[in-house]
Image 1 (cartoon, rainbow, N blue to C red):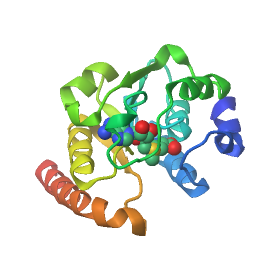
Image 2 (image 1 turned 60 degrees about the horizontal axis):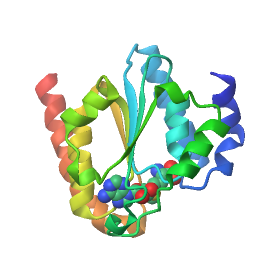
Image 3 (image 1 turned 180 degrees about the horizontal axis):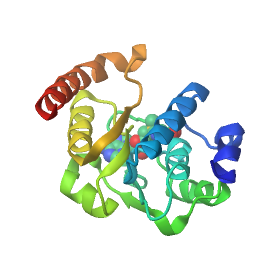
Image 4 (image 1 turned 60 degrees about the vertical axis):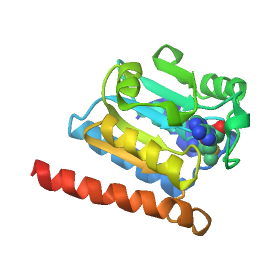
Length: 193
Ligand SMILES: C[S@@+](CC[C@H](N)C(=O)[O-])C[C@H]1O[C@@H](n2cnc3c(N)ncnc32)[C@H](O)[C@@H]1O
């Protein structure tokens, strides 16, 4: 584990505004390390980075030449239909530097995720994605759209992290699309095995 990752897990993440609990950090690190042991490599990517709290962790789990790609509305906040967070590119970039990220392997995109396609994501990531966080708009339609492109962008053995899936407030809007995708993944798994 790198020095920068150690520092971030210990205390650094608390200095970045956003949503990420200690248990979520431990689980993400454990799963990221498991991927490494299984020789699963690829980009990391997040829809909805806010100030970078989770994105920094995902990036610090990568090694060169793996790329990290951020997608957020940033200055297009008039399109933030459900007021989910408030991406701030300047604070995001400051936090990346402060927490020891390798800017040469990070790409930052200002975009409404409803316009994304898996082809566009894979091209920007220069590979399929091994960890994909879906944390943009929280409406059912946006969640379904974001999960749909995430499912088509991840590599074999890739992970998709969906924020707020089990929280009471997010449940109503996030449950339905996630159930649909879980059913899709179940079928994919059966198809592959
Ligand atoms: C809940 S915050 C993300 C929190 C972040 N993952 C963290 O680690 O703290 C949601 C983010 O999604 C962005 N967002 C909202 N709607 C979006 C959309 N349609 N497309 C892209 N980003 C969106 C917001 O600007 C905000 O930065």
